[in-house]
Length: 190
Image (cartoon, helix red, strand yellow):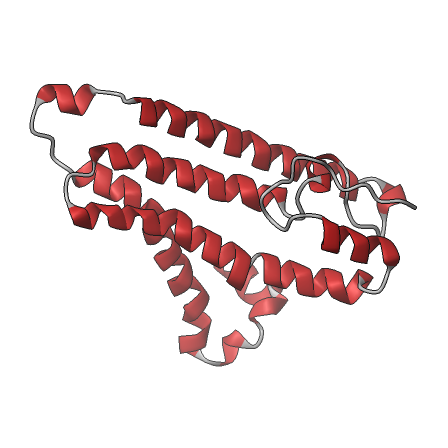
């Protein structure tokens, strides 16, 4: 696998010239994993005062679990819709505006962020010290990374290079929420 990564990933060609810059993506991923897991790490290291406390499930837990399930289904559905769209030869050189993609430009990212929000929400039930609230860094960091660093900016740059200036694309990007789905779908009038 190391050889495949080293030889086949073109996006790492510039990074390969310097060992420090080549390690940077992996260091960022390690930081991401730590910050994403922070609510779980806090939860697993928090001691409760009584046996009843450790076995109790609150309404917040139930709401959080339902939100997690909703986020998971939302993300999987968006990914499946995009996969099916891309594998249809009629859609070559087109952008997706159907299904969940009519409600949000990045519904899969909405699902991902919602899942980590739900994990942090559920973990808050066991927070006993102010420092435990740092667990909310998890969904905030996911949001920041997807919206400001790696997700949306990279996809937007690629999509703009391909479709910006086309009436339907410009209409879609101007009238469809970027992440949080709207209550009504964007209809492309072709």
